[in-house]
Image (cartoon, rainbow, N blue to C red; front, side, top):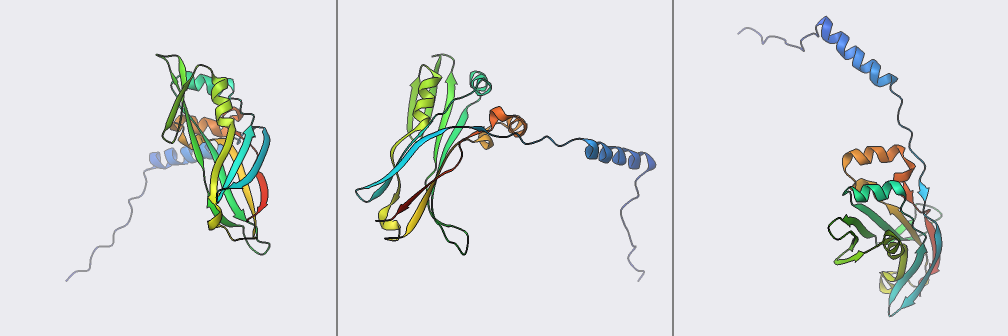
Length: 199
């Protein structure tokens, strides 16, 4: 029986080799878009307290939606803000132990027929006449339950890491690309760490 023929990839034609080489050179020469520094959301205050077996968080952010984001809303692009809340147990010998995670998502949209802003969080939806009202509601966290005391080790030291940010991953794809190089789309607070001891 004759052996199987040995086959391999067909060689590129000279024209195709020149085309591929030209594309590679263009990609190598194109400068990478620098990642913009985030526009910081000021963090005014935060406190923790324990009531009826739950750890409650109260916090205040000075959220200000800039003109670029407001224009996106007017054009029908919803914005998603996320309040990241994570409870960690610091460990000097290893990474922090994550004890709980309680993120909260807010969806902001513009309703042209009623000329109102709509804010949705979980099952709750509210409408507002001004963007300032939306900013105040997102920026204020009032006695939100973030963990059950029974799930924490009594007497152990924990830290609650709190941050408010615009979630650019929820934007349409073209806007996600623009967000990498535009400070207007990089809206976030610095993480705030609040120490407490589990009762």
